[in-house]
Amino acid sequence: MATPAAVLFDFDGVIVDSERLHHETMVEAMAGQGPATPWEFYREHLMGFDDRGAFAVLLKRAGIEPTPEEVRRRIARKAELFAQHAAAGRVPAFPGAVDLVRACATAGPVGLCSGALRSDVDPVLAALGIADCFAEKVTAEDVPASKPDPACYRLCVARLAARFSERGIAPATCVAIEDTDDGIVSARGAGLPVVAVATNLPADWLRAAGAAAVVERLAGLTPARLAELAGLA
Image 1 (cartoon, helix red, strand yellow):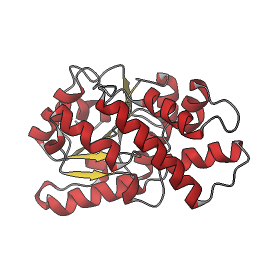
Image 2 (cartoon, one colour):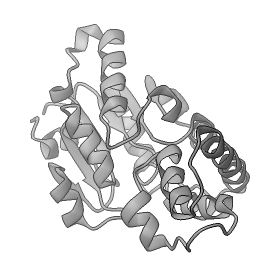
Image 3 (tube, rainbow, N blue to C red):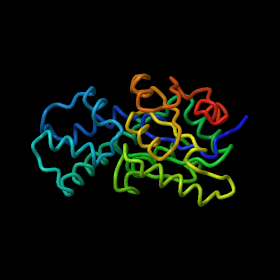
Image 4 (cartoon, one colour):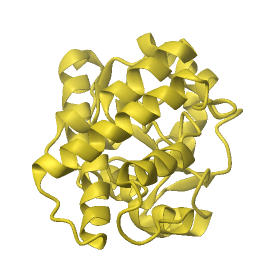
């Protein structure tokens, strides 16, 4: 059975169960300024954004001008808090995620497209023992605009195609794995079919955003099954 030319993983909500920690540390970095930001608001309005986009929304809600300096200050504080919690083991992998990453890396090139900071991502991947599985990583610092903008997926596919020219890597021959509507729109905007995992959002939201298929968990999936779900096989 066919396998994707490359598989591109999102990070938060796909590989690791970290969205609630992002919410918690984002609220803490706002230091009580502005309206309350419950999980439901984060899930519906901020999940899928990178920190730049999320803090721009939160600062405007608080009546604070989201200047680049102010946004950077909030991001730095959140990153500090997130790193402390991550070091304490509060960023676990979802069941089956590590096995799927390793299986995909054995079958072909694997990329990472995340709106998180590289400093949030790299220590966790290293702790999970899968840092070397990713041939290319695109994080928030690498692109000028976050998801739903397709820039991160376009860049990651271009890097993989240049590095593995013999595999015929093009957006339509790859599979993206996402967990948010913004992430799906980003990948679809770059021309990739998407298999979504319903870790935080309802399956119907993910289908409406354009996912080719929605699964409840990554456990038990293989590269060949991803190709089938995405319509490549």
